Image (cartoon, rainbow, N blue to C red; front, side, top):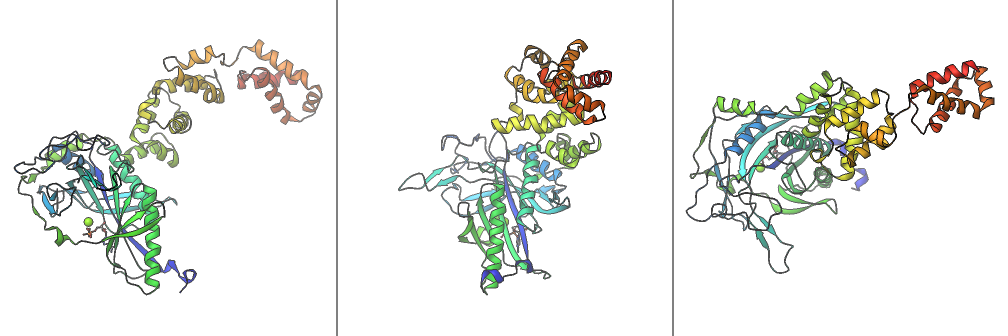
Length: 488
Ligand code: ADP
Ligand code: MG
């Protein structure tokens, strides 16, 4: 059958994601080694993370707290009694020969993450579980001609793994889910959410079935996607590949495939191992945990406002539209900056515009974070006041005063506007002078105006602005201009 004849709409994709988030803790999961992405290889290790005989792990309270925070943010149930488990496998970057993880008693179960589709509809993606575990080291096969090299810095770095139910229906939904996931971990400050550096990783489990059937198809797990877009691309490719195979009468095997971002395809990596291959058993070197309700409440009290709560506040209290509220709550730092401006101005709409256009534009252009932005929110509030008081126009503010403020951030916007001679003229003698020049320039247009062509007012205003080099206060000039024309 040729490709063109395949009716892809007969099929329904079924997708479940496994996300690993690297915890932003000072030390590793079970010992006190620090961890820094990009540090010299094998400098952030100790006998414990190297798995030397006789060493003992100790659990990191911050990891437990982070996992609880994530669980609370996703409305999960938090387990009381729980224990760690050993997942045994042999690999060169796993010095102990096993990974300490959780198996039967994950710290969080149930819960959901809500996504908003492009058409505005919302969908809750159910979570199966969140559990705590440790990362492995890194094998590098492309650094040396003859040997594979191993960097064990990452061995023992704490992770939480967040597993969804098989409820995601497209590559796009997976993309939206990951966007929410990244936003959440960043808000909670438990992970930096950087997919390129691997601090947030996603494995996608994909199967397809005929619409109307309930049994799941055989799933394929895809790894190696280092951006959210690539997760979407890998899923879209895989759905098509699987439908093509089924339509060609071929059988899908449960396997693990890798995404090749350059070619945009998935390639076989290994056949899928089953849980039995790992010989899970309770970790004997770490005591079980007993998490009480009081403990959970303690963690809850330290949690910041979540994106959803901020979105509510931005739409209901500040009356921003959904789009603006969405952009402003994308990151907690941006939301805090915006609210910082609101402490000093009541012009909410203008504050939102400054953050979304001028400030975000500048940050993007410079590739910096709002945390590193030199201007304090008060400065933006002062700038807004200058505009609202008619001292400068909006365009002068964004084209001239704002860039100058960045260069001279110790000065106030007023000082800058004064020093650049940009303050709007509201002295009526000065305004009258420009108006007279404008009127003198087009005597025949004055006659037309007098004959009833009101629209010519714009032409005269344009001239006044030109003569004043943009400094004429528009409201006052327009009033004076009308009066002067009427007197002609
Ligand atoms: P494994 O033991 O192979 O890792 P799990 O049952 O733990 O499988 O599921 C891993 C992920 O795969 C979960 O996100 C789950 O929702 C998803 N999943 C399970 N079965 C399917 C399926 N048939 N198609 C797509 N995704 C699936
Ligand atoms: Mg799994």
